[in-house]
Amino acid sequence: MELPRLLLCAASAALLLLRARADEHEHTYQDKEEVVLWMNTVGPYHNRQETYKYFSLPFCVGSKKSISHYHETLGEALQGVELEFSGLDIKFKDDVMQTTYCEIDLDKAKRDAFVYAIKNHYWYQMYIDDLPIWGIVGEADENGEDYYLWTYKKLEIGFNGNRIVDVNLTSEGKVKLVPNTKIQMSYSVKWKKSDVKFEDRFDKYLDPSFFQHRIHWFSIFNSFMMVIFLVGLVSMILMRTLRKDYARYSKEEEMDDMDRDLGDEYGWKQVHGDVFRPSSHPLIFSSLIGSGCQIFAVSFIVIIVAMIEDLYTERGSMLSTAIFVYAATSPVNGYFGGSLYARQGGRRWIKQMFIGAFLIPAMVCGTAFFINFIAIYYHASRAIPFGTMVAVCCICFFVILPLNLVGTILGRNLSGQPNFPCRVNAVPRPIPEKKWFMEPAVIVCLGGILPFGSIFIEMYFIFTSFWAYKIYYVYGFMMLVLVILCIVTVCVTIVCTYFLLNAEDYRWQWTSFLSAASTAIYVYMYSFYYYFFKTKMYGLFQTSFYFGYMAVFSTALGIMCGAIGYMGTSAFVRKIYTNVKID
Figure (cartoon, rainbow, N blue to C red):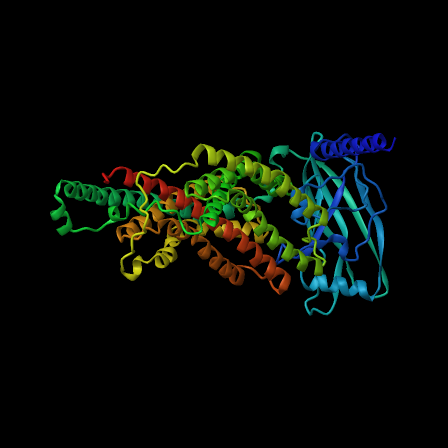
């Protein structure tokens, strides 16, 4: 009898959750229907990522105790969205005159908490119908001796038909903070008809003058011209040089053995027996390539979805979408990583599959959990709940791993057989000495400069949207920059690989990957400049949060660029060695 009862309870809970989700997302109201004012977080204005629960400050709660709906997505939980009911009674189209909803008994500890918040310019965030509202906690006088708390929340809500399209907050009622006094908190609600369409209600939060500034347009144009120049240069140099190489090799084919021995034997043809030799550490290499291909697929799909769906209008929707797309594209990782590992003769394919599946999740989760301990110490809302950690781990083990296994099996069976145009010699050819600037280490360091140059202006806008109060919405720009980055990366790595092979150095696989991945080093170096000159962050929590997640972002970008560079270079190498006659 217990099992049916448990199943019935579970079904009822699931039904309630589904109903709550529908109520939260319908955004339609009847007259005098409940409208929930959510209190989210509070934190210093100069670092939007350092946030705490709203009621971590000694604010008081309204008299209303219960609400009819509530929901939280995985993306909200990971982003530190801490929605708590304000206790204010608000009904659709029902005006409320100034009303006292609670009273703060201001002892010394509470006063000290408010004074600290005012000194550090604390702002708080609220939500009505998913529309964000910001307000300031209080202010100090000119001498910095007396501190004042804003006690009156004056809400003005615009509606169009049965939908809420605009919310404005005016903070009034400045009260001096004096210990052992009582402070009354009050609110009022004024409803007004608005002509703003529901689809356009987030336009007021966007900043076209910032994101569509002429510098942004100029950077896109500049990057586009760089692409045209690079593609033209690569095409001209390689086509002319390769034509000469092919002509020289064809002429050598017509020579007898004596003349050929006396001839000028050099160039990329001389390493044809080693160029398709498996890379060193093929297990790690193939896992990185598979992960990079998956990151590229995720970036491409999420940007397209963001262009179509306007994900910035829903809390945590960008992160939730990215997690879902990453899990769904796990077969891409398995296919490219597994097939490459099989072509390179790898036999421990199960180990490769595990490393490929958990490489990125382990890096992200490891960094997040480390920062999580600091967030817990600071009692910040960025601390990830234990249940959310368990949910992420379940996604890794029960979604990402099985899909990666499917992709690995398909990759090994469909494209896992080595079909190189040249035989691989049994004994590796010795690598001759060459000039210092042709060494792989130098090529790797220089390879990332041009790709970084094509995206560094966009990096400023992306950083500003994440670390400051800007909503990034120009995803068309981002898609164009992604395409430009891919083209520039492939062109640069092809040129680097051609010079390397011409110096009779066949270690092109890791070199092509790392020369493209070195873009991440320059991005991370730029993040230092941004931190010290464009932000006002300070303290252990803010610093570790910033540099921790910037390291994750830069590493993921580097792995993606490395995979793109390797894939393009691999096609180029296969093409040029297919077109030469080799005994």
